[in-house]
Length: 204
Image (cartoon, rainbow, N blue to C red):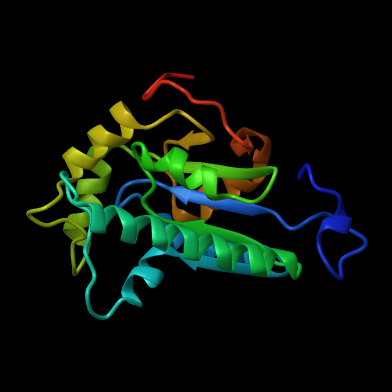
């Protein structure tokens, strides 16, 4: 499913080139859970979680907000770059990689521009807003605070994010059946790189 030949991966002269899946969506969409399960489906799989990279910053962290300053944007882009670098290193050594993070709005194109591959599988988990609010109510610690609301990020996702990859409505799916769906129709999530500039929120 990759545009690369197997010779692009050092030490792997036969067999398919390792795939890279990117899972996006707003907090509560199920990215981390689905990402971990998806990576486990591969014989050699790695899950690179954006939350894990964010947690590595133990002082001086500046998070994104609806009106972020330059430092917040720089730190978010740095987090993306670290995830891509880790993914590329593992992929070069024969691992399939799943990256998950909140990659919405104009950040989606900026993230995709970082990718060093010819193609990637991009899945945007897009359950109904009511499902996200229900899941957040069931969590011991919510991903939302006074800075962000589920409704606000949902609007950014649908009004300011280019319709790239496969936008999967996982409202009525379990994490396991979400993974089944992703693996059953991989052609739906393929994004060839580099991507053209698209209008935000354009429908399929």
